[in-house]
Image (cartoon, rainbow, N blue to C red):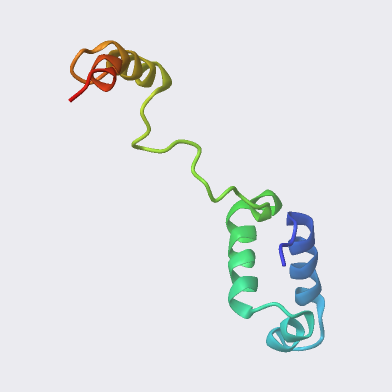
Length: 92
C-alpha cells in the first residue's frame, strides 16, 4: 500500500508518541521497521516535504536521441538511395 507524505508523517508521529515499543506499534500498523526507519531518516534529513513520493522514472534518459536529430535521421533514411524508399521499392 502506498502512503501519502502526510500519512507517513502521521504514522511517524503516532509511533513516536506510542507507549508501546516501536516494533510492536509498527506490527500493529502493518508497517515493516525498515520502511519506517527509511521514512524517519528522510524526515530528519529533509523535513516533511521529503516524505512525498518521488517518481521512480528519470526525467531524462541518458541515451535518448533528441527529437530534432531523430527527424534528421529519419529524413536521411527516406531520401537516401542506399537505405531509403528507393532501396525498398527496387527489386533485389
